[in-house]
Length: 285
Image 1 (cartoon, one colour):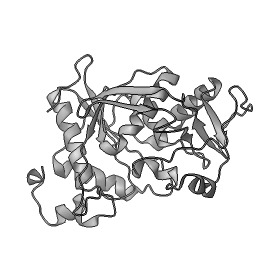
Image 2: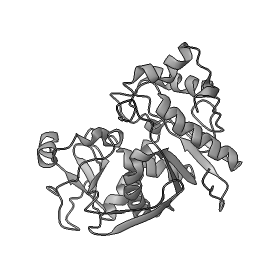
Image 3: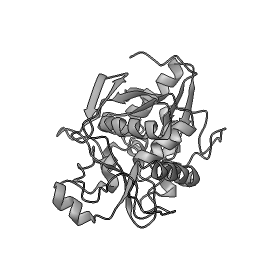
């Protein structure tokens, strides 16, 4: 196992979204996160990332808690046990997200984007980015709405338009991943101006994760390798908001027989299905 952070008392987290049943790929990542917290004699937090109002369902929240317990994973803070850094559901942390949005706007880091879904798809030929974190990456934004610095209108609420973070073109973002080693991405080439707030008045994944990890004092983020590039984006947000970067550990992805990474549509490999088949969870890893 790769080295563990040691500068501060270890605080890790597992952060599933209640948009479907957890599958074996989630299980492997969360199992690694659990054992890294155990090895560091640290604290593990369960955070319910229920930001998407259309796809998040209460029965998936209870299912993920039951399935994680079935795996033998235990956490010290979470929606079911409480803790000093709650609430542990992202949908209930809106005030923190709004405060961060206001700070980013006041600092000139973000701008409103009026581009429609069709315009972005046509410009980039890539999938719609509302669920980009589930699709490995969001398309490189072509800069259609990017204004001159300092030209943002005085608005007090983010609703009604998308808000994007203005990336520093050409800057290299480098970080050490505790699994993959030295990793780097170039802003404006590997990723472009990215969403921090959606037009339906929901904070985007990148902003919510950064704000909540900082507020919960997370010292190491353990997640799938599909989010490696998101680390560079989140480093920029941490810098703009004055947060300290956590350490990072990105896990290898579990793939199906065709080499595609698992998704929640793979019901046969869901933890619930494996439980119903009376599979011994100790034999999974």
